[in-house]
Length: 370
Image (cartoon, rainbow, N blue to C red):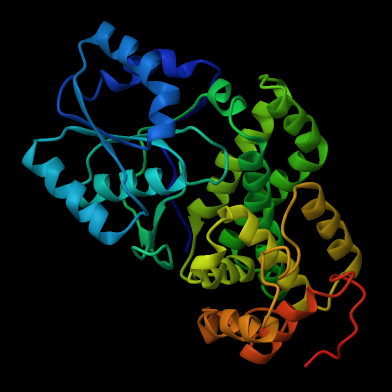
């Protein structure tokens, strides 16, 4: 089987925020709920208000106070139902957009528009909401039936953001290929997996050709063809890879490492993609195959400022204890882990995390593999 859940429409256009009313008006002119963050709202409010005024659109704006939690979604859902909400708009980064998607789903599958203001994840597109604890620990993924009517990407807004977000987004997107490829090595018969991997590989190829040009444009706060292509790869190609599913949920090793690390409050200063990048380093140490590809990956991760070792994460003491804690928090169903061409157990994962402390963590290891 194969199932595809994707947004109905995707548009990346500089200055699109100035026309947002054109996209909202067909769905609602009143009782519009906007979920956002203070920074994202500051970047979009003036243009949004002007466009909404042209169309006579009225809205209520709410700030997400913390993480995307079940309680936050439930509270906003209650308010949306009490106010007769007709449309949900999410404006911001991944936590805001996941919350908006969760509200649209829980409110009776209301129409939804997502407006990413950073290109740090594929949350604007992806057909899940990632649910956290109040303290920021990743709990689960909430599958969604309702996909956005529009994903509106204003590359002019994204060009103004710190380049760190785009670097993290690139790493999160390229991780999809490196996480899917080991599963594909073991199973070339799944059409869904093949399609996921092809979309993910196209994103990797895009970053190899245009990644540095896009970062330079971002640093200069300029919209260029390279920046637009890379933003599309981060949001649309990575989102497309997540949109194709079959009966098997193949969790990426790097993302599982990320999920465990989120339960360590002292490591919350890192972006999602940065922690996923560290997880990729751990995965390459667990996987004996293709050392040339591993070296290429390490070079890319260095170029995108990924933390490559426990010390880069800020762990400077009791490293073995921390490695064991992260390894014990690692969650992939054993039946899924068995579909990978390398073994996953607490001992091996802890060893690989500690092995990142070696000078060249990908191809020069000093400790014997367990």
